[in-house]
Image (spheres, rainbow, N blue to C red):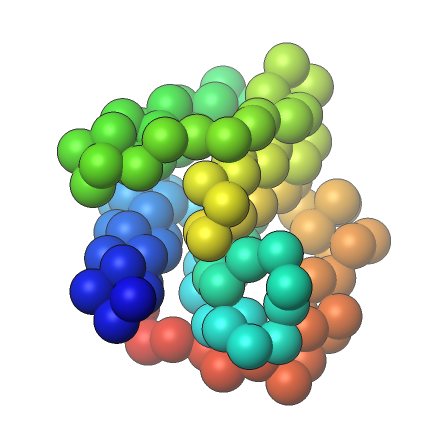
Length: 117
């Protein structure tokens, strides 16, 4: 189980790095292990445009395959206001700035540890 957790953490940090390399801002990785019954890590980033947000989502999905992870679900890709990529133990959120401010996931999960990217 520890090895799986280590791979999950590595992928969460890799997803954050992709977002940073593609000029997303306010990138946060929250460790929700033991706090959420649904997932262990949230990766949250703010995109600059819907095209850029889709590109980041596509690159993160490719990286997931390279980490041996399969995407369970995807939502919001067409509208690109809030793209959610669900890898079960890692959930990636790519927001536009308006939706990021409105949903404020960091406040909702304020007790979660923020990982250093």
